[in-house]
Image (cartoon, rainbow, N blue to C red; front, side):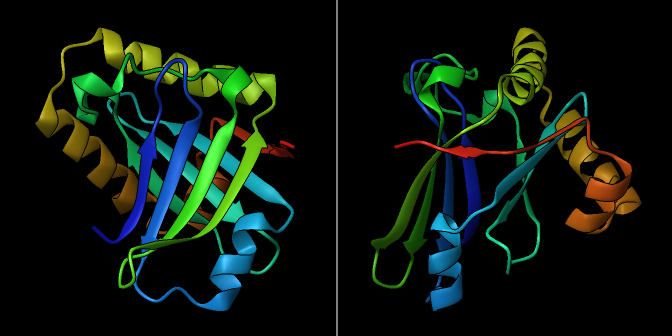
Length: 161
């Protein structure tokens, strides 16, 4: 599957996997370039993580719902102490081209964690999730539109060593 995938499980780092066909060298370099910025949208029946890697690439986004994760992955949630792992994978060669670890500030991690917990508590409704994502995209067609008009939390992540 091409594009981003977001996984949030207690006891593990948040994982942002970006799978691209033949990623450009600028995309590879951007994974480790500062600043690494994030924004979060609480859409009630969905969460949207916006991210910007480095100073060159534009903002991108990935929707999230805890019930879409496989049960064997673990309990959905944000374990702020584990940080965020960003991985860029070349789909054509099936190789990891870049990996970067960062930490979200406590307030941002708490905001994301609250949304995840609220969604986890409610029974999953696939149609409600799809409609929430579609409605956000209808009202805010680009990541920049979401960023300017709708975000609930925003941060610049700190590199982990």
